[in-house]
Image: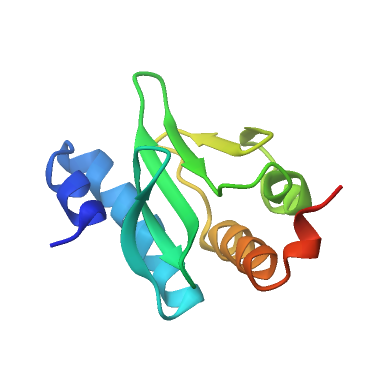
Length: 120
């Protein structure tokens, strides 16, 4: 078991299902990922860099792509979801669409592969 698996095991079933689905789509999109931590959060890593993390908070589920630019870069996929620099927020009863997850993961992978994309 890895850090993401450990985190999922401690969640309520409804939250676990939604968060596990996002991680599954991220793994499918990115291919070779590993479980790790970044900023104290369970995360998937890609090429040794933090790719994506999800955390249940009191008010929402937060998706963290470890980039301040990714949410704006994929904003057309996030209509109806609250997002700002480095965070996308959603409710378990209104989960992110798979195409939005794929867009977030793909944009973050591109940043990892080409660090110049992270610059302003």
